[in-house]
Length: 156
Image 1 (cartoon, rainbow, N blue to C red):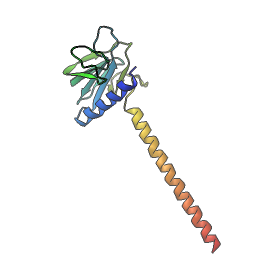
Image 2 (spheres, rainbow, N blue to C red; image 1 turned 90 degrees about the horizontal axis):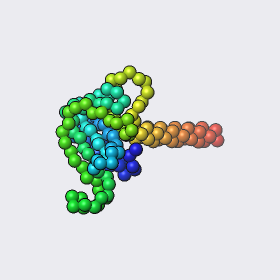
Image 3 (cartoon, helix red, strand yellow; image 1 turned 120 degrees about the vertical axis):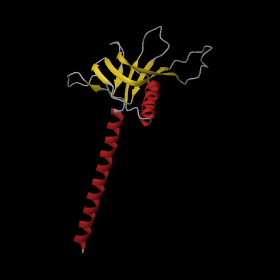
Image 4 (cartoon, helix red, strand yellow; image 1 turned 30 degrees about the horizontal axis):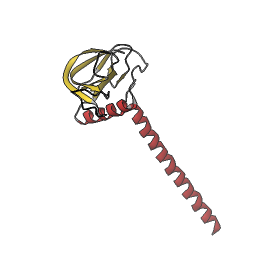
C-alpha cells in the first residue's frame, strides 16, 4: 500500500502527466528488499489494457521509478524528496500478486468487479459530493426565499 506521502506524490504525477497528454496510468508498489525503488508508475498516451488483474499491456509509454526512502548515501542528498528515474517502455507488464496496484487501465478480461482502484476516482467522488452539497444549499435558500415571500404576502 502506498504511504500518505507516496499517494500524494503519485496523484501529483498523474495530474502532471495527464496535462502532457498521458491519460492512462498504472501504478504499483515494489516490496522486494533488493530494489532501490518503492513505486513504479507507467504512463501512456494510448490505452493501457488490463489483460488480467495483474498483467497489463503498456504501449509507447513512460516508466517513472520512485524512491521515497530517506537514505543518506553518496548518490542522494538525504532530503525528504523522492528520487525519480524516467525511461521509455513498451511491453507487457506483469505485477506480482502481493503488490498493490492502482490504475485507470481499460479492462479486457470479463468481470464486473473492480479489481484495481483508480487513484482519481476518490477525487471525483469528493468533487461530486461538494457539487451535491452546493445544489442542496441552493435549494434550501430558494425554499426559504419562497416561504418568506409567501408569509409577507399573507400580511398585506
